[in-house]
Image (cartoon, rainbow, N blue to C red; front, side, top):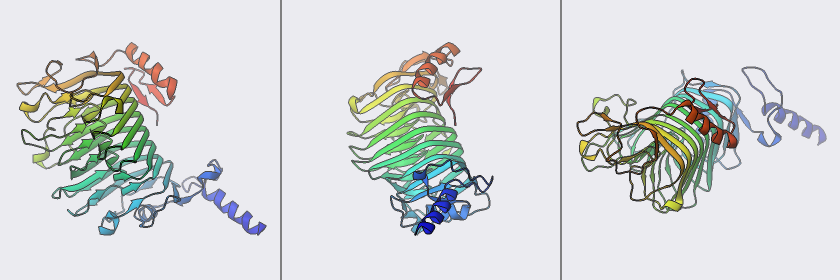
Length: 405
């Protein structure tokens, strides 16, 4: 028995730290992090589409995985997959992956169509595209998952580069998670850096990271977010509402949203979908952080956050239903040190306007309406961010804060 135990420990120790690209077996991964290594695109696909995922599943990337020559098959079986375990990215990168749903009946789209109480952390997604058949009406989508439910779902230490998510559902489309479902569901999103992330919904409810919180009691916590990308909803009617937010599209009444330490640079237009009828602008209820907040002030708290970009609506008649915090002013979030600068709005004549005079959404405190903040202002912001999380740094020229990943 002792000999068997020794052999088992040796294998587990090696498997917990081996890197096929470098032959490294240094044992730096803690004992509690032992799990099943993933080396190839085929192995990752088998893991992501397994139908018997349980909470005790633990997998990790043993090396970077390039999907350039791999076809990800999306079918009825995949659509019913729910991920319940843990994926440790181990500091590695998933690149050049396209997940295409060609059916109008598959409702959940993402690397994991659904996630229930799972954890994904310490991973980079580079050129990952979630493509959906837009002829349907129920395709909720997210790069990680179309739907999050269960007790607590955690996404931590994630980098997204040059990636895109598209869907067609009022259930939500988000850069990471489409829909948060369940009165006891908590979605934690920590230490996320997104660069050139494009998120498109051919319907309403779309957010840079989360499409919507669907259920009263549901909670989304975001800490330390550096987002740069485009968010877009393809709604053309004069009275249609996009519910599009730089980070989250919709917070339902009775739901909870907390944001601490975030830099958001979002443009509310689209270049992800190339069909000509999609090349336009999102319609009413655009918010720098939240598209539409229906929850009371005590439930929605934003602290130490900054927004810049455009809140540029498609329909002139609805050009005022925007805000640098939320596109709707009737229910306001609680703010502490929440600012914006250099935000473009649509003017009466259809041009760009930097003057904040007629917006009907909740507004942050303006630093400078027509330019980015000074280096001195960024220095002060950095002191606040760095005191809590030393993963923040400053651009040496502009002073702008960015998350180190």
